[in-house]
Image (cartoon, rainbow over all chains, first blue to last red; front, top):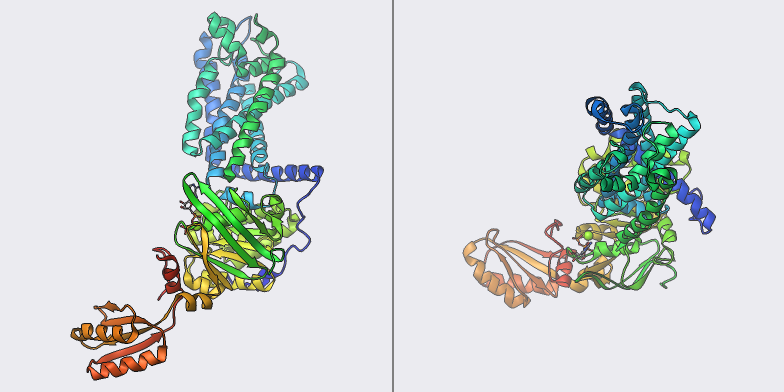
Length: 287
Length: 323
Ligand SMILES: Nc1ncnc2c1ncn2[C@@H]1O[C@H](COP(=O)(O)OP(=O)(O)OP(=O)(O)O)[C@@H](O)[C@H]1O
Ligand SMILES: [Mg+2]
């Protein structure tokens, strides 16, 4: 600390805006602050490249192991390549596993002193959560890009044009957003970042296994098939297969017939339930 | 000083955590442009009071105004007017020092150019320019503390809250911070700080509030507290350890106070009411009893003593201020 005299030179007389009182002004601040927090969270991602490498290794390994090792023995309803059937499933599964990162980062943020700084600033309080969601979506977009490139290399294609393909990506991101809220809630409920990143696995794994990610539900025993068909993961996977024009779509069940509807309905329902719960829990930080 | 013109007003604040009562009728008034020091033993409720006043914590009863705004009803106005450095560092460990300041500046809605300029100024002032690009996780405790302090000064706050701001700082940084606080106050900022260092309170604070068991138990300027709760002391060192008991008896008779004896250093001390009379009487009595004395001093009361007398126990094991 050298000279301290300049410190009082009011750096901001007038430059610092007063908190808005109108609803529109508040919304603008919420958006601006959410964006700033998104940037902050993305910087965390960039600062830890080894985490990204580890992160991508899992889905790529799934593509290789299931696509080439088990893939030869796997059947696809109708005709078609198993790898092409598999890829949309891996896209969605990767979104699910992102949940652990969301939860542990929320736990880290709220467990450390830095949350006090955020909460004592004249920023929108929602920004801590919306910034998390924004960064999760950007990161998911990055992951999807890597996976799409991998997919193209192993022979996966989108066959219904760019519009449908983008719609599929949109649905996948919508599901990711639902998982973000689940992750935020978990991160607030289990404030230990080490624990929370691990507790995700015992429930993410069966959720993937009991879905159409690896096997078409028609090929499962009836009751398992019914569970798999109604699984929120399956809805998005089935809708993505339909939009990408990949094999393994259709099926007898109502759920399979209305995959697009469910791929929108499930995430929206999950967000409608989870987001208010997470926000309520977040507000309890001031107890 | 009326409530309207005071920077901080707390009335009857109560806050319980389960069965622990952290604040129990906490009252405080801090006039604008002054420095108020909160002193109190560990667990007295200092941090809790600061967290309530900075809108971080809801409370059970009472009311509080900061910078003219009600803490419960207009928290966003309060937040826009304050700066806070809490007891534990509140910086983003993953980001670099500069990124931290830029982030907090943007969240204060300053224009981007001004944020960058201000961050550089603060990094310079807090001696962090050399490490500005390194992630805060690699900072030493004192560096992190300085970054934390810089973060609360990105805009000049109307009211600055500092919870044990100099804990963990080296003497140079501590002096620098004291200067910074004095300069801020000259510019009109009000400062409410907690500290375990009584010397710090003595140096900085216009008024001190002593907190114990969730309420303010004594209040006044450092000088007032010292005279009200401390006493002048007389201290003497005898030449021969064998004469200690006899000397102690004399001191007790003359001063009428409780005598403290330190065998190792052959030092005796006792509180006195009338300094000069006591000194004269004691010297005469010692001479009459032929007790050889090496040194005699009269000491002014310290804030330490006042503090001990008010709370009945020490500030904490961390209290290092010399007696
Ligand atoms: N989150 C919490 N949950 C339960 N009890 C708490 C919590 N925070 C504080 N307390 C209790 O409230 C009381 C006051 O704590 P506080 O942190 O305000 O003390 P303090 O004066 O700041 O002490 P220190 O000098 O050690 O920092 C203590 O008894 C403490 O145990
Ligand atoms: Mg404290």
